[in-house]
Image (cartoon, rainbow, N blue to C red; front, side, top):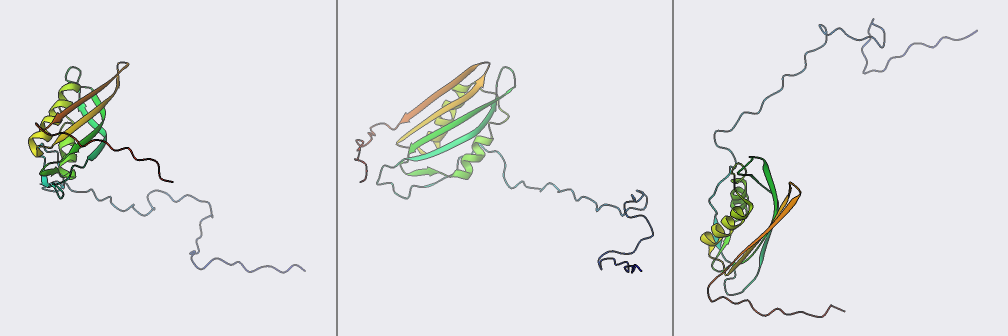
Length: 175
């Protein structure tokens, strides 16, 4: 004689009279929770700005180099309106003031919808940095990505009148 097993259902399942693989009609399915759309703040947390904020150089008695790497610069081609992309490398030796990074980010963002030639943008940025902080030295190397089969590299520099860098010292490798 074969003993029959009592049917067991896990505690977390409710008994149902519908077949195990039956699909519930959409009219009887519970409604999905309503998606909450994020509301736009009255004042955005950040926005593009041409205003370069500055702070006092913490070591004005010493020459030292500050480097910024900006791999995602975007503006528009003034002739076609197509986006232009560049990788900027900025090096500067501050004098009395330094550029605040957050404002530099917002400053670069402000070019996103502007049309300008590569050479103009590169030189404008150097001019604006000089106007904001009057550094001892600044160099901007702009590597503009290929468009029409041509890659453009533009380097612009500014050296404060009378400033001379200290001689470079090459040290032997550490043992």
